[in-house]
Amino acid sequence: MDDAFGVPVRVDRFPKREFIAEARGVWPFKRIVVSPHFLMMHPTYQRAVLAHEAGHCKHFHFEKRILALPVLDIDARMDSRIRARSRDRSRRICRKPKVMD
Ligand SMILES: [Zn+2]
Image (tube, protein in one colour):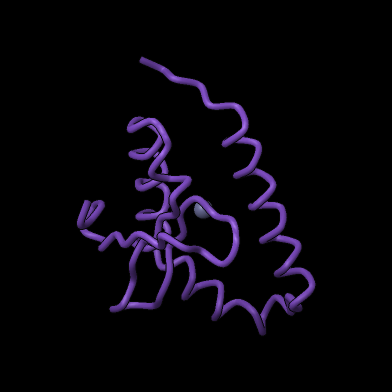
């Protein structure tokens, strides 16, 4: 797995915190980083996750978020709440794997 939808994919085999997959970096150094949890997922879910993360990269979500920070006055506490919510959602998805084949 070298890339997904033109975005490089790398495996973080020893992540320091829990995650499934993340879009990281800013243009032109964007990449998708996946965890060992991702590698255990059904290929159908892997494709969906990669498409989701590639969408973040293709639509410059990280860059837009950085630019919007001063405008929207989102403080660090709000940012960590958003990340915690996203992490909780990921955990719920991982707990209930549904194989669609
Ligand atoms: Zn996302």
